[in-house]
Length: 415
Image (cartoon, rainbow, N blue to C red):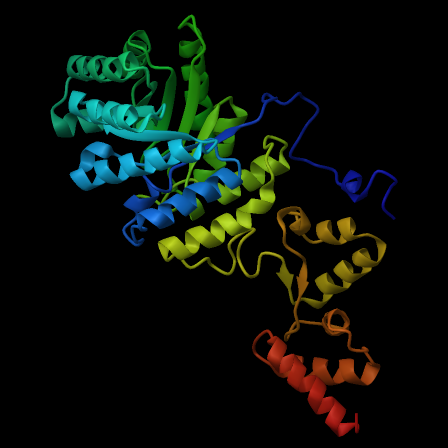
């Protein structure tokens, strides 16, 4: 039986030990869907009106900052970024806006121009490739990288922009060069360092080492320096790495809707917030995640996989007899118990419900549950009739098929 303090007290959580949590404060999230997400080769660029609606959705889930891309990429990119920034400023939306550019003076000046013409206090994300691989391919020297970084960061900082220094491929970069570049950026006004797993190379242990290294370096700056994490999913570790970064002290995590982005994508925003919420690091209402995801899926023409956690059709759906029986027994005791008995994610907390379907692996509990939800008396004969048909099927029966079986039974029995 559930205790007086609730079913959750019955869970022995091996995820947490007796040692104190390293992190004690909430984590912020930057939505990179309209920048890195749109670099995905399979999505469509939404119209400006749609992008405005998506920014509003990001606000509704508690996103701190949204990245609108590179104003220097083209005249169209500049004009559309400026228009969106003016709209955010006019609407007084409670969200920060970032624009990105290379460590090139011209790129930073375009971001400064957007800020001045829109009246919005932008974040300028100034990025440079920091790995030896990139330097070899481009013919760059450390001295040249330092010079470019100093000039670009100075332009943004002198203009009063919140300046973020971004090292591409940080997770494959030598500590000696990172130290030189980070110190240069901080000396010229950078307020935040962004560590990037640009090709999805890192493991959670690598994330912890890199965050520890950077945290120690930033502590020597003599002023508060925030740390961002931007990860990709090439090894399937995007979410795990993002959570490792959060646990290790990253102030903000970059993510995109469904994890879309360059190649196989980035950290999935919905699953990041799901986990931050369950671990107590999220202070916003999570019921906006479903509308956010639905709006993003439609705008990006991205079909949500049926087995996608939290959002997919099957996320809280079971057709297995043993599972259904346990859920129904739990439901008779308390809604909270039924939400936890066969789910690590409490569906009701995120605006969803536990669903019981009927199929070839079902039992009588599945049928009785389906009938009860529709106010149909679950007589022994009706349950047996439906279950016999389900056992002979090769799929989960639809509501229409189940309703037809109910009518068929009534006709046979004169009902």
